[in-house]
Length: 548
Image (cartoon, rainbow, N blue to C red):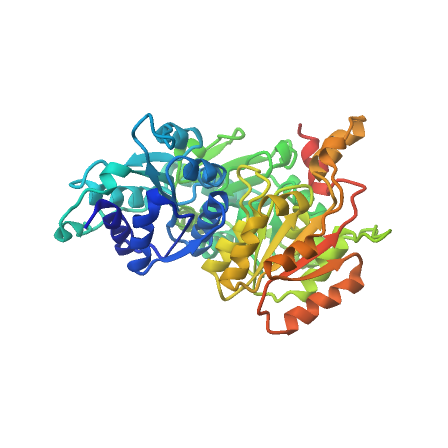
């Protein structure tokens, strides 16, 4: 067997279930080997889309994602998606053909490229070491949640190795790090004394709902998440939804008045804490994270605990239960507060003046109507831009796997590919792609992928005929906006050209066609071209501008 095929076979034996990519000569054999050994291969129309699909698939499936690309331009085409995955600590293995000869048209320094965007570069160096090097890449991605670029030099790919060399060694035992007792004790003491504690759970706590709710019930803490963990506490009467720029007025007020904020697997960065404005003047800050370097990385903290979120929550619960007196924060959880949370935390329930007019629909009105139409079992992929808060917050999600939020790099154009990867991971849910007009055009080639895969996806384009963030950032200061405004685009015709059903929405009445599609066979994707109002920036963008 040649090395290229061996790499694919080894990854299949390690449990890889799906791979994404664009096939060229440099990754042809490894991709075929993946498919022949039972791995589903999803061919994208651009490497950038493939990278984001693999990223989203890994996030939603909880497995290691795989991306397969050609040497040189195949890798550079995927770089933005790889950067997003690396910043998000997505467990992803990128199989990249590599031209080692400097005179090759395809030659670039792929090691330095990977390092530049935060990925870990590795290389298969020989037939004798190919299996061990592939296993190392996979286990590094899985155990340390890293994005790994495994370079496959063309000459090495052609080398042969014996079939009996394909045995995959058993993984070493890896104990979950336990919290240092001293720091866990400090956190327990702080929680016992706090009168208004709040938990903010992030990506690193998505597995720990049961443990965090048990500790919160014991200490009276209210429950919030970062955007990437939205839905983790869905159904809890103490769920404040998302903390930060997306937070509703009541959520922001309750977090701001808290005297102890505990981040669980959450960076507590400028977005989650609104540049620090959600932190009261006398509030203590605690942070729990597996990575020591994450503690206090974005803001000063009073208590830092290195440990897994679930294990730490269990340890702290035991310590709190050992106290002789009930935690002070339990008095905060009153029936009146629960009723207020039920009435006011959701953005759907926040009063607003509908600004729909002149053939354009208010994005709030649009999204609230869609929320009522779409089935509850949904998975939403959101692109970046002025519009993004509306689908992220006005569309409800069933759990922590209901929103796939590829926004660590804040790149426009990843939304459609995000929804595709999430849809492949969760075929039991209705996939929804929420895009701005700019991002929709950047990723339009993947409409063909949606149609080819037969995904019953709803693709909603919030069209303000502009790069809205720039319009609302620079426009108030009188700057010319000619370069960030554009003439109308007929997205409905574009969608139909790819094989989608399509509807143009200018007002609530036009959404009847969405209901009709939902009630039908859903045998092709539906593109909703929403002409949205554009007079003002989104609330979250206005909040973000205050921090710049």
